[in-house]
Length: 70
Image (cartoon, rainbow, N blue to C red; front, side, top):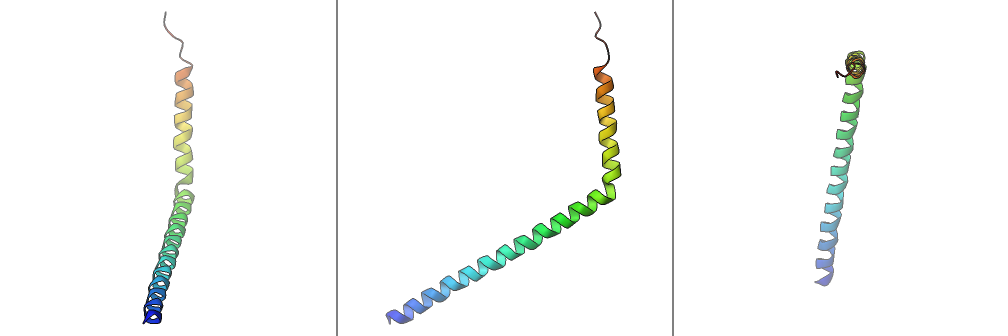
């Protein structure tokens, strides 16, 4: 009787561990997908993003060079 309960307990624990492993694998695949998508977006739009930040930098530097009145 006790052996039967012990075996059922071990099976339940083993099942939980295997589900955790599957969940970790799914998170790993999701992380890999996000990484690949991020790299693809940066490759595709990298030049445009650089241009936007360069224009913003130029505008900010120009605004700081305006002399104060007074």
